[in-house]
Amino acid sequence: MAESRNPYEKYKTAIFRTVLILLIISTVYAVYMAIVTPTGLASNEYERMRSDYILMVLQCIVGSFVIFLPSKVEQRFRLDIPDIMEILYFLFLFCAIYLGEVQNFYFKIPYWDLILHCFSAGMLGALGFVIVNFFNDMERIKITLSPFFVSLFAFCFALTCGTVWEIYEFLADGMLGTNMQKFITSDGTVLIGRDALVDTMEDFIVDSLGALVVTAIGYRHLNKRNKASIQQAEAEHREQRRA
Image 1 (cartoon, rainbow, N blue to C red):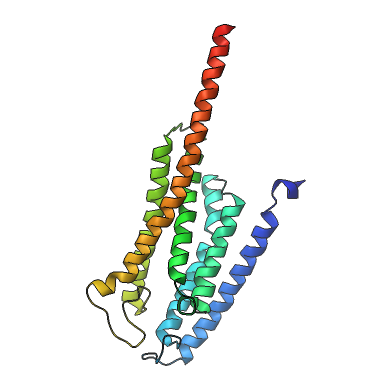
Image 2 (cartoon, rainbow, N blue to C red):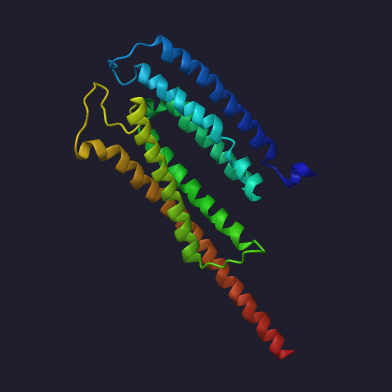
């Protein structure tokens, strides 16, 4: 009976364990490679130097902690995050960290970074709707927001998370000498001016577009549901007056 009520539960657990194991193994591998790999500049974009493995260590460690975030949020705030959203979250970590950093998809696959930013923005926008719905359903705090303000919150929530990520990239580049914001080319040229901002601004633009699409869909759904509720309430009111 429990399996029929939660069809995604077993898949969620299996994906969670698989991604976590891959991140832990990748952390050990990256630490070893960071020790034995020399410093310097790469001869091509596919060659990795010590700074690349330091970045890989950082990403894998962060991923190994934030993968527990959904369960901690559910326990702390008694918030029911849909299993399908948790699965998408784990798959995002797999694509961003294991495939992106460990398997070097950021250089092997064109626009891999932008694809992930668009996907994550949409996922965060959907999470924004879940958060507002959680507060709407609370008995102690009764909040009823219009579809527009729910969508606006979801959109701003997604963009805020994207901004926090860019701050994280900036700080990591400054403190650890990494190149997450792609301000250094593969031949070691340091970009200046507008060219140095291209990667960050592309990420912001794609985040905005991904969040906008999801929140527009969410707004349309909420608006139709509200209109249906109003029509049902009006019909019930007319029936009561007739009685």
